[in-house]
Every structure is written in C-alpha cells, then in structure tokens.
Image (cartoon, rainbow, N blue to C red; front, side, top):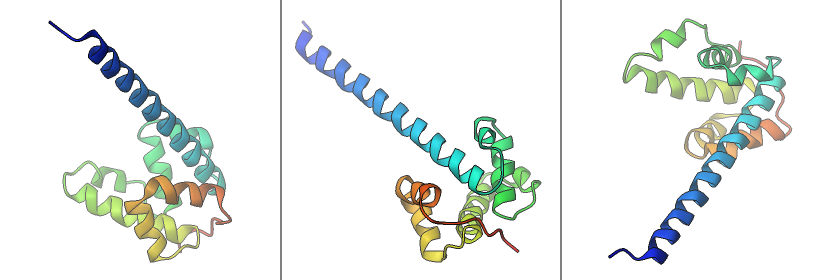
Amino acid sequence: MYDDAGASAAAGIGAGMMILYFAIVIFMLIVWWKIFIKAGKPGWGILIPIYNVILMLEIAGRPGWWFLLMLIPVVDIVIAIMVIFDLAKAFGKGTGFGFGMMFLGIIFYPMLAFGDAQYVGNN
C-alpha cells in the first residue's frame, strides 16, 4: 500500500529540517548571548524566559514594566518594533539597520553581535 522509499525520504527530510531548526536556534542563542555581554548584561540571561525580555528592554533603554505591554495583543507588535529600533540605536546604528533587524534578523543580529558595533546606550 505505502511506498517505503517515500516514507523514508519524508522521514529523512523531516529529520534534516529538525536538525537545521535546532542549529539556527542554538546559533541565535549564541548571538543574543553575545549582544547581552556587549551591553554589559549577563549572557546567561537570554536563557531565562521573561528575564531575557526585561534585559532586552533595559538594553534598548526602555523601562522593564513595558514587559506588561508586550502581553497585550496588537500592542505587543508596536512595542516590539519600537524595541528593535531602540536596540539598533543603543548600539550606534541607524534606522536602516533597525529595518534590517526587523526583516532580516538572521543576518543583522549576528552583524550586531559579532561586528564592530559598541553599546552606547539610549539617552
């Protein structure tokens, strides 16, 4: 009834996709760890849910209570966009880099982490 070769191929593709997914997740954890360290925050903070968002808000120069705003549907999208641009600004980058972080994060966040960007903070 079933084609064993087709099922094996599908299983192999699925396993390959899972490996790729986990590789990307681990890579982005390393990237965020490096960003946190550059900003003078503990790198391990990225591993703790909720705390990592509060640290990210601090790096972006926003108050920690904004985390509560991120729990409100639709408002969370606006807040997240503001934080992305504030994060770019905190590392001395401009609006264009902020758009890159928003639409091509897999490229721009590693540039922020491993590039020459220095944390200058938001005033």
